Length: 209
Figure 1 (tube, helix red, strand yellow):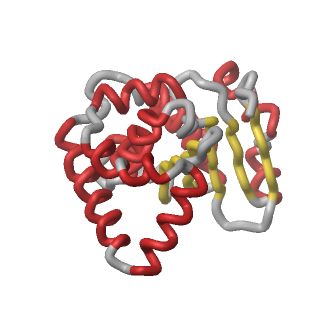
Figure 2 (figure 1 turned 90 degrees about the horizontal axis):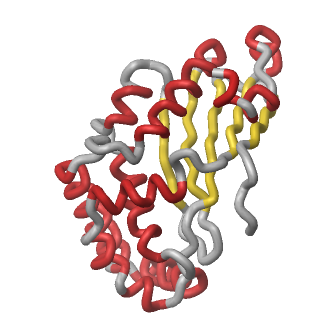
């Protein structure tokens, strides 16, 4: 999959009560950059914790009702997604604040070792617990075998346990910070008649806000 040449904005109008904001990047491929896939998993887990800086600044302040970060492991370009819900009235303010946080992801002090250790243990426990059930083991084995091969799968827990703050910063710089991405918003048509958000505005967000 070729890299995105520039940012892209997508606007969809549907009868919903909130506004859904979704950012997406082309993330690491297991075959080309396996080290970054481990960092991606820990990075997402840390940011999804209620006490993370991202959650404190964007959810606890009321800009977003909810916000989640995800990396989907794939052999060729696994997608990185940040998505959340906000009110139509706050959608521009929410996107601006999210862009500001994204620019800070690779900054010194954005993550701490104290944040990494609990989420690594939690993911390890969750992985091992899934292996104790025959159905869970079969599902995981089939997925990882098809996507990455068994060597990656068998070494996943150990590799992830060694992730550090600099590893997360390198991952953020290489795949997220200042990298082309898609900004998407799903909003009610009547609500958008009031705020007049457009795909063009989303595409050129950095130049206009």
